[in-house]
Length: 390
Image 1: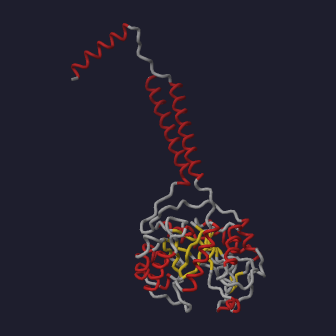
Image 2: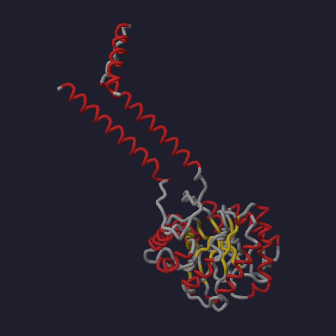
């Protein structure tokens, strides 16, 4: 084949020369440099465009979800209370109360409520009422399942399993639970259950629900990590100014949860005083400074959402609902709070090891490639130019 091609090539060459055609000279050195630089600039502009496109998808602040209790009857206010809501001693069956709560929460920048629930006739009725209110207000809901009884002992696994079945069949289809591609359910009191018990509970429901643990430390979470979809830490009694390594503890828990591809809900409370129900700690609100400190710490821990403790836990004095004593202090803090951008969360699988999200490093990554390309290209051209001149 080559013997046939060579004569043909020579013939074509003679014809081209007879027509006055000349082989183009190689580009000059300066022209080559200009072309390389132009290509680099075009690549850099392309990287900036991509980064801007990525940033446009992450303009929402970190979601804020407040723990919300629907256990109130008028007589509930007669026990262990030192302050009362501006709305009075309400019942959780009052629709107008729920409507006002949702409106106040939205005005303060709260994304939704984390509703304390287990299946009873009263709580089922009140949950449905809140769902109706939230749907009309385009307000989100999560669930914190009451895994412990009044004596702080774990509920039977079969009861929890049945309740989650009931929730899935009865409530889960509502758009208020659509923060992600399936509803979020936090299982309260997971530290009282064995890993096998947690596995029995979650394995039946993780194709329809994201089920989070509520562990108090990294070791507790790691004990359950393969059987849950993350962790929500309910830490209302901490003094952020005196607790040793407060930020480091939150950061460590966040890293552990994210390493397993889970959802990390960091805590933030305005204050605490549970002496009337047997507690001993008092965390002063400090005119909103305690809440500000805890919010900032939660955000810095790379939280996927902040769990505000709480909307209306008046017995522990950790409420942010407007009250007779504190007015709208906590909601004013929230309204003024600047939150950072959230990590990108999609259909995560906490049974797998988490992968690194390159989103926030993308611009540096692309710029590095461009610089390497330019440097290598210029060096190659310089070496070739010197070689030709020798």
